[in-house]
Length: 160
Image (cartoon, rainbow, N blue to C red; front, side, top):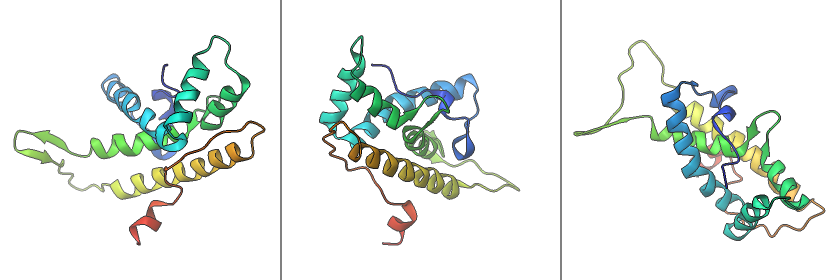
């Protein structure tokens, strides 16, 4: 199965990423790695596998189309997957690995808004996760939800 999102989901608000070929290539790698992890954590491995199999059918059942559409809004390019991938992509690309170890670029006369971007992207994902979870619970279809994905804002977790 192909990914549910692509680089075009990273052109809005806090998850805006330069749409240059070298960035898109790294972003597509991050999507391929992190989207399945996100879906496993959101749905549980069993429901995730059922979704993949259901969408791979030549004519997918309405149940799987509905679940996909809860997770991904292709019309406006909005998905909690993108926010999850962004947090992973952004944190993985904060430093440069050299033979001497990880090195953070030195920014003179600038502000690095690492925490702001990561916290806000995570918190937006939490809101979308909550919406997805509520939609699954209230659906006419029965989804056996086994989630361990965070439904709490990152600031809440930092204060513990």
